[in-house]
Length: 336
Image (cartoon, rainbow, N blue to C red; front, side, top):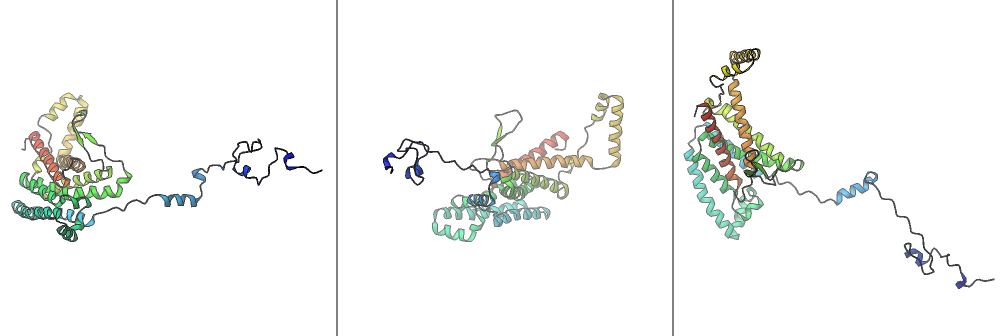
């Protein structure tokens, strides 16, 4: 006995039926519910195949190449060696100021023409563009601010402090920039501001958010090394201020305050140090000076002063702070 198509059971559906292929747990045309297909298990990152991880790495956007600014940094650093040579050879700072002033009188008009003439801009960048940053090609050349900062410190500060300020500009700034580009991505960025006086929130120093902790540490270490090397081995102008001595009467006051046995130990210790003739006082003075130079260099390089160029502000601020330190030290020790 034959069975007609309309007499077929409602629950039997051909596997090749389009309704079965396109339904997702929804009753089909005959009123029967089709079983939903099982979803594939999610693959955990640990069980992913090497090929998939390799593809994921290829899909990541490549990091932009680091511009090391080698010609610019070479010129930047060479100014420090020239400055040190002029100081050691007793060069006249007035002559240097006059030469830099003449150079400024040539560079400033040339920069104005560059910013207003496309032809001269093309020629200028063709000759000197390798020394410029991309941000300087549409604004004032950084060399102008560099020269202004150097002229200021040579004209205002004592010669030894002006020399150290230029060395900080030349070497500490270069070290901070180079190490920041190399290791800055591996360290935390600097905070937006630090308190000038602890627990006084409204007196804060603004820091550039683009600066990194790695660059700050490099600038600080280089600044400390500059201060120690210059006043420790090259210049003897501040030897009297850097030779630390105990104030008169301090040892007697300490002995009266402490218990008898402890006071006796302190007295014998001080006498032993004096008998050894080691320059402990000078070491303390140089260590204090190096710490001050390091902190001043790192903070002055990381400051965010708006549109002011750090080639101008770095030597002025660092030299002013170091000069102030010597003024305070001379007042406290009576050697001013």
